[in-house]
Image 1 (cartoon, rainbow, N blue to C red):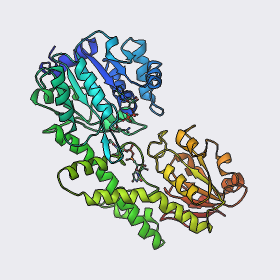
Image 2: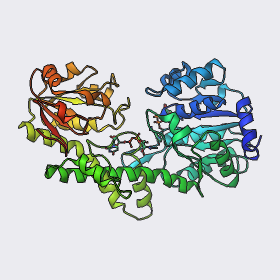
Image 3: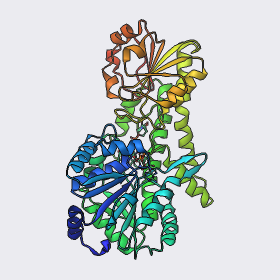
Image 4: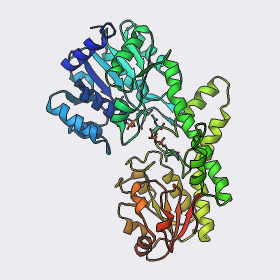
Length: 451
Ligand SMILES: NC(=O)C1=CN([C@@H]2O[C@H](COP(=O)(O)OP(=O)(O)OC[C@H]3O[C@@H](n4cnc5c(N)ncnc54)[C@H](O)[C@@H]3O)[C@@H](O)[C@H]2O)C=CC1
Ligand SMILES: CC(=O)N[C@@H]1[C@@H](OP(=O)(O)OP(=O)(O)OC[C@H]2O[C@@H](n3ccc(=O)[nH]c3=O)[C@H](O)[C@@H]2O)O[C@H](C(=O)O)[C@@H](O)[C@@H]1O
């Protein structure tokens, strides 16, 4: 069946009847969200994940923490016999299929890590038959999709945009609202290796993206679009951190100034804080560096922004050192391990760097997080992680709010004093605490209220 020859209506009918299968490689946040979106559409979905624990959770109807719509879609799909999880495609009979690749592309030791995507591309193209489609979803350096697909298709003896449709459509989701980001919030960015792939990309994503579809002129333009989004954010967060340092030096309330500046449409000053975490924003700038250096260009602003954001944990550890008169032998409670508020994801969280800087200065550290119960990295540092505020604050000389979890907004001076048994210095790196509730507390807000 040549998927590119079907119209949206026939595509929809075949997907719902199971005549065309959706196969998702990678059941992490992105892949499980895609599986859920297509299950909610009524399609027949096969999930593949090489990690048995992840595959097991999905097969039991469990999506990532904090994504209830994913778990619900898995359970409905399982009950209706429209969802299966298998270790590889060899376990299922061949049928026309759209294969989504939702595996990680990361950065390590100065280079883009593509081996997961290479393996998934090899498997997906290898199982593809004439008329099928492969859709690449991770954020990648410009030129990656074409290069990997060309090699895999050559090995499989498939002609791209002829036998096999090849689509690049970057996922634009954020933890905690992933399904609605795909279905409601953002237009789908689509592109193909040729006109037939591009048409199919538009028809397919148009079935589920109610915010519409933006068709890009090439896969390279689509790869650049997603990477530029992330670089824009990282650079603007670095700018916010730099402006906040100046505001702090003048004893200004940065939030007040920021709101006023952003009251006109040309200013979008972001929020300052402990730094930039997650698998997206700290990583994408390095892909740009990879691409730029590859063409003899030096992306100075992008690299400087990365340096500024990476320097924030040390900036705050030094602030605590100064304000408390030396951290050696002191007990520090760090509130928040997650990379941003109200998510249970600590990947690349700046809290890890803050903990290391505090330990380096001779402090003893305990970390609190309301959503993350255990963490191998903290365990390796022999740093306790607790979900109980009383345990975290007991005997604390310094309290650092590292993550903007909404649970911390309700904290007040009396409870901090009673739980700590003293009067610790409280440093708020994310403007979470309410100064009017901090009576009797030594509060040091970054570019905010100090008492
Ligand atoms: N996490 C996020 O908020 C966003 C991530 N992205 C992009 O999507 C990519 C994936 O992100 P996540 O889903 O968070 O990653 P993840 O690490 O949570 O999940 C990836 C899954 O793929 C599995 N896997 C790896 N290689 C495989 C293979 N060959 N076959 C089958 N399964 C395989 C892993 O076992 C893992 O469970 C990221 O690298 C990023 O580029 C894009 C937007 C948002
Ligand atoms: C598709 C995609 O990659 N979307 C991105 C994703 O961002 P993500 O979930 O990684 O969170 P984020 O809101 O960008 O925050 C990343 C990191 O940056 C920090 N951060 C964020 C905004 C800000 O003004 N200041 C700041 O310090 C956060 O604390 C966090 O550590 O989701 C964001 C969203 O939609 O909220 C989106 O704006 C981002 O571009």
